[in-house]
Image (cartoon, rainbow, N blue to C red; front, side, top):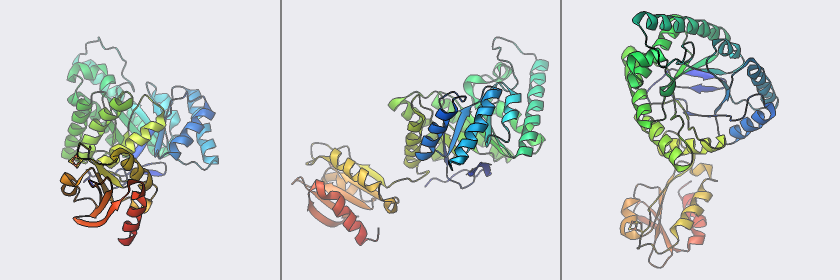
Length: 384
Ligand code: SF4
């Protein structure tokens, strides 16, 4: 498993983010928040498929009221998944959500700064913009402390405050400087329940910004947890690969306490993708790890069908979740390449299969249709 950068623990409802807690999976509903019934249904589906925390777009006072109703209905159904209010442009609405949402997410770039990108900023105007932001944030953070609500400050490459862009550009330095203003405001009122995110639609930029933020925070001794995501990643394979590169690279570095895989698809698809990224990085383990060769002209059985059969069978056996199982086409490379697996299924020239544990053959001549039964029998022999 990966060695994680140590961060402080921050509660979001009944989920704790940071420290040694599991890296939490987040998603966001994609229905207007005023549609209470549809949001309740979507949130229940997300909770059912393994989402740990769900976010809703809050753009008006009516949305805040809808959020309160959604929360009440969910609780009446016994669904306790934490809810996050996603607020842009309005410190007032962000404040209204405190005590209702388990976490409020604001965007550092548009919390108080106006989005006039063509404007030039004098030093005085920059300082004045910073002062206004810090004061508004201090008010919000103080209220968040009173209501025991966690805040996430999102630093998005595409929506940095114009004065920040004017002074620092729009790369990792600018993103860090934007975050630093918010952290200064939090420190000013001793607010500690803060999570940060540094997002970009460009995976390289997102990686660079998070690495810089960690290195700066480590120097200063700040340990705020990080929420990872590649924004506007798209859909399908490309969206998943882009997210895996951005999020996965950082997870392997030990960076990241909660993730969202943003896909232009049904939100529940984000959860399956997030689980795959976490498992592939060794950050969380959901099912047995299966490795398989690509097959080649030496393969004498239907390896794709056998792989699918083994994968479908093993995921229904939670006690086998710690195992690594190899499915290999032939003995030529199969035995050596799979020696680190707990059990290896290897094709033989007859078209049947052999099962190995390390270099020891446990069974031979198994028809591919019978492989799961035989594996289960051998696993039981080894106490699995
Ligand atoms: S393990 Fe055998 S079948 Fe699979 S790719 Fe390697 S040589 Fe080919």
